[in-house]
Amino acid sequence: MAVKTKQNTQKKVGTCVGAGYIALDIVFNEILNEDPKYWTGGSCGNILTILSYWNWNTYPLSRLGKDIASRFILKDIKSWGVDTRFISTEKIVDTPIVIERIKKRKTGKYLHKFEWTCPNCGSRLPHYRPITFDEISSFKQSLPIPEVFYFDRISKSTFEIASFLKSEGSIIFFEPSSVKNSPLFEKCLQISDIVKYSNERIEDITLLDEDSICLQIQTMGENGLRYKYNSSRKLNGKKWVHLKSYHLTEFADSTGSGDWCSAGIIHILGKNGQKGIKELSEKDVKFALNYGQAFAALNCMFDGARGLMYSGLSKKEIEIAVTKIQKNESVGDLIESNKKSNICKTMLKICKNCHHP
Image (cartoon, rainbow, N blue to C red; front, side, top):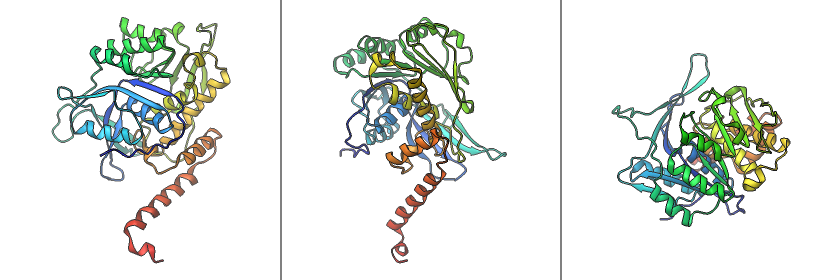
């Protein structure tokens, strides 16, 4: 039976191909004591699904297991319009799984914690497996040439496909989770147009080959982010520019905020491919980064890495909220009104007294 997608039939904005971490997130909200939620996660999985929601053609390149976890993932991302033809499922591979627990500190602040062991039996949960060279050969024959190629894990096979798409005019967006002192890591930096990383994971930025990066972004959590844009592909004395973060009155979970930021940046800057990224003004870059930050802030009001997509808010309402956040205006009324509306719709289906005021 075909999966009914939630995506509309609007004209596509662009195409993004991605390779990297795709996992099944099992989210336990221990504050509300709700049943767990089973959602697609991993930066690559999140970003491609978010972009698909915003009318991009998206194609993940991934190896998953032929198991229950991959069935959850495939059903989820297909429902959002992601094209899964380049995802292989194999019996010899186990699908990555991540446990997320949402708790509250004694101070009242929310806390999310990730676990990579089974909470029932204690065994280690499966981790990422990169695509193979055999798969790359077939990809090159049938893969659409995208405006953007995104990757968050390094491997020889991923570097091979990134190099190929770079030569075809795609923007290469690299989001490393750590610095690797290896020739392969250096090669990945050298072919990347945009490199984005968190200061919590990468502190020594001097290790990055700045001369080869068009746009370098370092996120700093509650302190916002800073960026360096080199339109001429040379530093030319450019300095870091700092952008403050947006703060909301309601906060539920910061998981996935970096992925929403990346998706927002790609959505604004990635439409014209490699040529377009080199012709941006400083104002264009700042707007795109602010847009990504507003996306990230809004998602923090909901559980899970992509909780915003399951919130019931329409795209129009999300766009209004993002604009309000960029103007430092409150979105509390919009969110609260939506929550009340969802409750009403749900209870109308099951409560006989709702029909008889």
